[in-house]
Image (cartoon, rainbow, N blue to C red):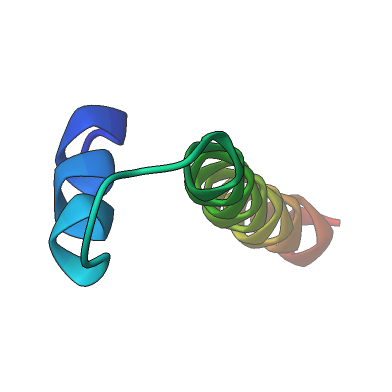
Length: 53
């Protein structure tokens, strides 16, 4: 899912016009999702290094 697809999905969850707070919340959630994915990928990559030792 891209950032644009995520924002379109979020817009579908909100009734009425989007406020600045809604957009900030959506982008904050997107950043958190991507951070978690990167963190988990780093853990998986690091596990392979530990097994090699």
